Amino acid sequence: MRWALQALIGFVATAFAVYVVLIIALFFFQRLLLYHPNQTVPDPAEFGVAEMAVVQVPTEDGFNLLGWWRAPRDETQPVIAYFHGNSGHIGTRVDKVRDYLDAGYGVLLLSYRYNAGSGGSPSEDVLLADARAGLAFLKNKGIAGARIVPYGESLGSGAAVAMAATQPVGALVLEAPYDNMAKLAQHHYWYTPARWLVRDTLDSASRIGKVSAPILIVHGERDRIIPQKFARRLFEAAPKPKEAHFLPEARHNDLLDYGLTRFVIDFLDRNFK
Image (cartoon, rainbow, N blue to C red; front, side, top):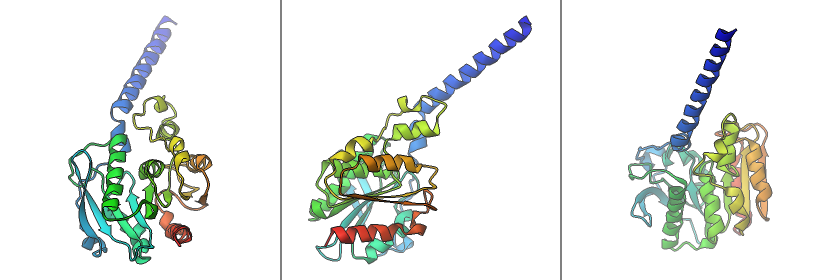
């Protein structure tokens, strides 16, 4: 009996030690899980958008971000500032912006400072600083805030919401967004106190109430990376005017197959007449 008790105590102590190590590892390596730096420096022509120019977008703290830029067809058209998700690079977003280019919209595809050899490291502050640099670039091109549309895809939705909450914009488009990164982390790592460990909370729910422009959310109901409940909570927190499309068969990365750009173009054409 004593041997069995000692074995049980030893097992519990080992399990607890492993759990503590896991918690420590999650805390110190969380940004490797959230951000996936990619040092590819893509060329627009190789990805089928030779009409887009390669530009350098300077940040306030001295980084130069890789961007692809094409001006709008005329001054009535919206200009999309595209903030992509945590994997891939701006070249892998061409399929998503092709229809916007064909519609005559201006498009800025912006890389983050931790991608494309810019030399930076990721964090929430960095993400927002780079997004501000993107909007500043557009304003330096003579684009009025009322024509700028921050477009946030997945991780980038946090940056798009923050920009629309702090600067005048014409509309806000969110593809597969979340309400709060700490809550999303708790969902995925339910067996840990994840929400208390997250450094970069990207709390869009607390920011979106300050957005005064029309808001569009498109999300897949079969999304397992960012389950729809997180987008629905963000939609509930958003002020009017707002609209959302929750697509029954869509997942996280296939919204384009279920009419994503059609919803966006319809929304923008109604709000930029």
